[in-house]
Image 1 (cartoon, rainbow, N blue to C red):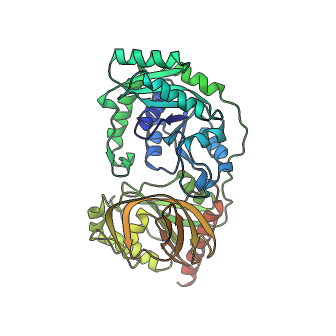
Image 2: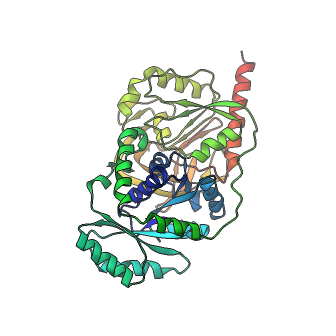
Image 3: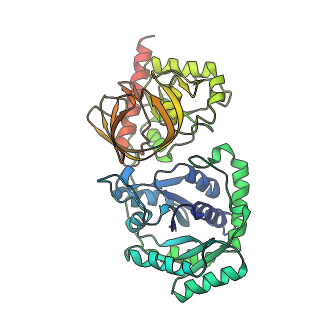
Length: 447
């Protein structure tokens, strides 16, 4: 587990760079995972390793499912590298939520933790800070530190000496280097899907810096010493039906958990990739639609130009094809996004704001939909700067800000800001694929 003393210490850069270094120069097959609900960092992991990265989030899946998801992430690989979230002990603020911090996940997995600390504005005092993290919770196996953002050889020597004097192992001292900066935007790093070649080149540069800065042998030895844990990987859905489900993707809609797509396919879906910006025609004979989140606001002008594509998507939804849209997918279904025309499936307009909505949400379903029945509860998260006017009344959402309504639900539609993770809820995939097959059969009967 690569953890941070706080956000902004270079945790993602070092974790992804380490994955790249192990994959390309140490000759290892590397599995990857990310603590929390984030979509962007796992994209960097996948580019670094060539394999999907799994999310480990106790609120979305329950704590009991975490070891199995980690096992799936590590299956068939030589080493599993997990990137933490925020500071080591920071977690969910929603009352009644299970522990979601990096420390809590490390405990659930019995994973050794390597702490990333930024020495940019400190020197020997970093030892006192690191000592506090090591001693705060004896149940968390913090095995040592990687020091980041060191200004000079003398600075590096002072930091290393202070940590070793305090009995803290040092797995690397990383210099201040412009090659370690990766492009960012309002919700974090720029997604890999937007600039894959540029980010791959940057990851190789990061790996070069880390090759001269980290003690790979010592890090791998800590991984080998991790307690052996035998768990059952989460079961995939049984094949329950057959349906062709269009999944909207591309640069504008890249926020999707691999577990969700795998669950749909296991339940019997043939996944058909759709990209409004690719110039490809909208495919025929789709039985359902899954529209994940992403950054449609960045590509709104391009989406607006695809008038025929938008019209065909709207026609498919209007004909009764089961449709599941999350966050950015909800914006695509709105009438407009900051004035740019979208599909007009739901009677609302989307606008960008300067207010970030971020956090976990427990949702009570008010109307039966293709993925859940009225009265059931869903556990997800929200992450957006946009707002929908009107917001809809399909869900009653309990968040750290209070309780409110949102989303558009019908027997054929589930569209909301809520992101869901299906690793521990395969029944959602089964229900959606069954509904999509039902639509296909009804369409065939009507011809």
